[in-house]
Length: 298
Image 1 (spheres, rainbow, N blue to C red):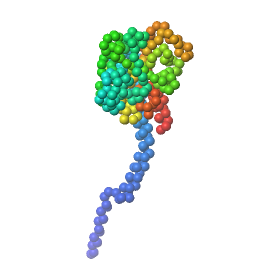
Image 2 (image 1 turned 45 degrees about the vertical axis):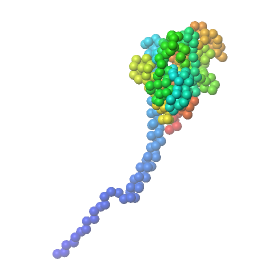
Image 3 (image 1 turned 60 degrees about the horizontal axis):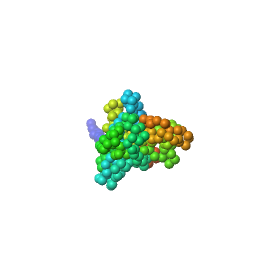
Image 4 (image 1 turned 120 degrees about the vertical axis):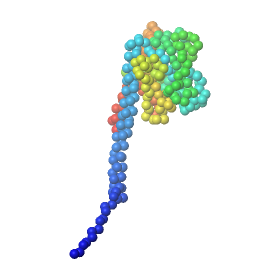
């Protein structure tokens, strides 16, 4: 009887080089298809976070005003509280006392304005509840946190009072202050009147009395470019305040100034962002429009 011995041919484990190449090509193709969707998701998250922060701050500010009957003190002046000598980034080199805070992402959108003690503007601010403020230290490396310096008493003409306080006033967008405010805050330019009022920006930082009163913490703006993050530039949001500065006169539309000194009025929350992202201050209105444009583009 004959016996035939069968050979065992063990199947080779794993994949051949050709099979592996095919799988890798498929994965690369799928990754390429997903990249636009990942970018769109990141942009949508960015837009939503900033819009949500602005909305929450606006609501918290209005709630504070409704409960307290005044604006919250301990705002950031957005000006240098000390001479800058050893700063970093945008604040490197000599920085003048009272100048617009060099840590802003776009300091050109503000100009320095000072008010004499007892003036219409000083009275308007002090009566509104903003009777204390802090300036920013250009020598601190982190441009958002820990920059506060010098508590200024804005209702008393003493040392560390009006004589030391410089405010950051909104400037024109190239046409007018009114148009700039309309772009940032919405509404018609005719609502604003730079003849009768100054429009100043004050930062809502961790020192603000509103924090832990009607809002848990002071949020920050997340820029599209990480090089302008809250460590590199001032990331806290900014409240635009209308300050009465004249009791006589009229604007180009014939709108007369109030005959009495009005309390400073909160108008809305904005962010100061790099010029590559926006040439003007951005508020809820701007952020919503940008969000829809980014979604449509993707």
